Length: 285
Ligand SMILES: [Zn+2]
Image (cartoon, rainbow, N blue to C red; front, side, top):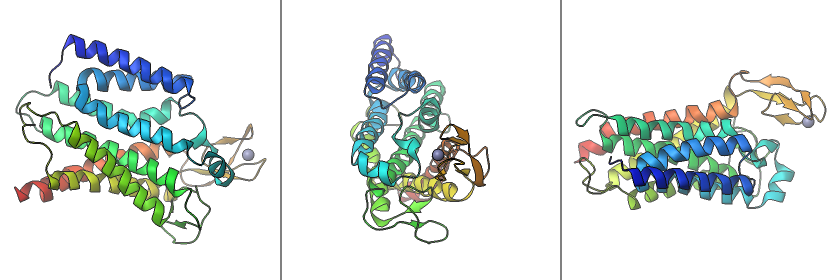
C-alpha cells in the first residue's frame, strides 16, 4: 500500500466533508459524525481510492435505503433506533473492523501473512456483511406479508430482531454483491500481490462470507441479543431505556447490544472469508 502526503491530506478532507454532510442530513448524530470522521480519515487517508470505494458504497446505499419507505417502516417497526441518526457506537460497530484492517494492511511487512491481497479481500468481506445486513433490514421491512423468526420459523412482526423474509434474504445477497463488485471495480491493480484483479472464486468467497455474516447477525439477534419490554408503551425494544424509563429485560444478555451483534457478525464474515478463500477459492488456481 503506498502512502503519500497528498493522499492523506485528501483523505482527511474527504472524511470531514462526508461526515459533516451526513450530520447535516441527519444520517449521523454529532458523536456519530466524529466516529465516522475517524473511520473515514483512516480508510481514505491510508487505504486510498481502492479501500474508499467499497466503504462509500456501503455508507451511501445504506443511508439512501433507510430513507425509502420511511413512514411505512416507522409505523411497522418495533425498533425505532434504526431511523434515528446513527450514533458513534453504531458507526464503530460497522466501521471499526474495516478501519482496523486498513491499518493492519498498511503496517504489514512485505511477504507477511495475511498478505495485502488477503487483507483487501477480508476488508471487502466485513463490509459485504454490514451491507447485506443493512439492505436485508431496510428492504425486507418493506416486504408484504409476515417474516418468520430465523430460529423458530414462527411468523413475527417486520423489524423484529431475527426476522427473515424471502425479499430480505435476496436483498442481503444483493447488498453483499454490491460491495463485492465495488471492490472489483476499485481493485488496487499494479501493486505487489494485488497484480491480478479479484477472480470469480475470490468474488464468490467474499459474497458468501458477507451473506454468512448477515445470517450470523440474524441468528445472534434472535438468540443472545438483549431484548427489552418498555414499561410505559409495552413495545419490545432493543435498548435498555424507552419512553424515558428503564425497560424490562425480556431475553438475551444485557451486554449483547445490537452494536455488539453487528461487530460479531463482521468478525464472523472475516473468519468465513478466510476459510472460504484458503480452502475453496485458492485451491482452484
Ligand atoms: Zn416505550
